[in-house]
Amino acid sequence: MKVSEKLEAIIVEAKSHIELVKNLNELNDAKAKYLGKKGSFSDVMKLMRDLPNEDRPMFGKVTNEAKQVILGYIEEQRNILEQQIVNEKLSKETVDVTLPGREFTVGVKHILTQVIEEMEDLFIGMGYEIMEGPEVEIDEYNFEKLNLPKDHPARDMQDSFYITDDTLLRTHTSSVQVRTMLANKEKTPIKIICPGTVFRRDDDDATHSHQFMQIEGLVVDEKASMADLKGTLLEVARKMFGEDRKIRLRPSYFPFTEPSVEVDVSCHNCNGKGCNVCKGTGWIEILGSGIVNDNVLEACGYDSKKYQGFAFGIGVERMAMLRYGINDIRAFYTNDLRFIKQFKKWKKT
Ligand code: 2U9
Image (cartoon, rainbow, N blue to C red; front, side, top):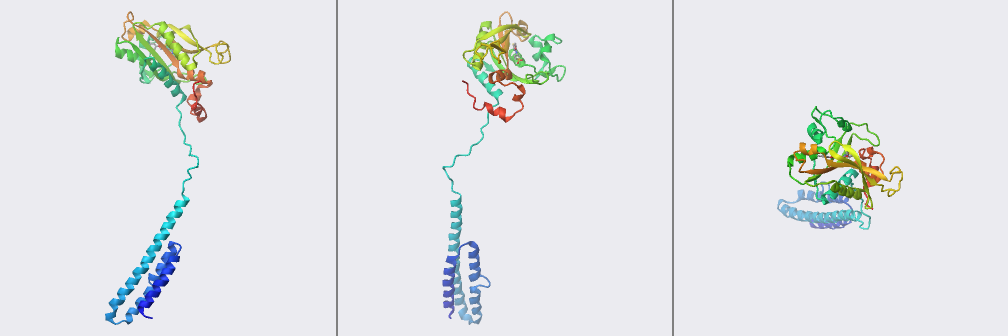
């Protein structure tokens, strides 16, 4: 058989073989069978040894051309097989657009944050500004400017965490009101609320915590009266406990206000008839307030003959406990998701 016929036979065989190859491994085997060291082409190349020198270039040329043809078949088949692999992968990875979407977790603001933000909205609507201040405070701003001189017995009402003789963890956010007045010296009106964390030495139990949150408010103007205070407190009570609520004021004592009052709201559970929430009285105590003591106005740089003010203090935890029927203050701080998640879908009724 002539060389050209041999090559032709190899090409025909290789073509039909390669076309039937089903995967890349088989394709590599086929390549070795025809073009490898021990393959069909090596056998043909051995014939070159017996050829006269002048015929060798032509021999080389034809065998090389035949080799290129087979390599072409191999590459063609490789493309087909690789495309098949891609197609198979794609068909397995198809997206079923009818499947329900994956639910992802949406966080919820802590209930104390929600209550604070709600109160902030209310007060911003009434023209108040929100002020913040440091949690580590000096004795002068936490007590002395608020008519609580050193060794005054009323300091016992707010057992404190002292850091040095003159610095402590603030026992109320009133120190922020003091700072605001000192920074504004007789500028009026002052109309602020001061939300924040406060600290008092206490044994923790279901109703006491050594750390809790307050929103305190202060208005100072030439005519900021008890009537203004009462109207403001009624807004707070209604915002927190419903539009039908009433309030009543009872005389009380705070060193920084004179006169001072304790504020009760008509029970939101029984509408004032008497139930276990209001202990049968129809009223629930929600906050303390009063007319700013003249000594405080003077100590903070305001002429008490010209200016008058009112102030109030709201315990945020207490407010939330009453509103949602929470009976253990520690639930706010232990971060049990079963507690926290309950306030996700709450809507005001
Ligand atoms: C200035 C002048 C007066 C703030 C006030 C209360 C009454 C009050 C309590 C409520 C519950 C504290 O969180 S609580 O335990 N607060 O009853 N706070 S008047 O009076 C001020 C504050 C600042 C310059």
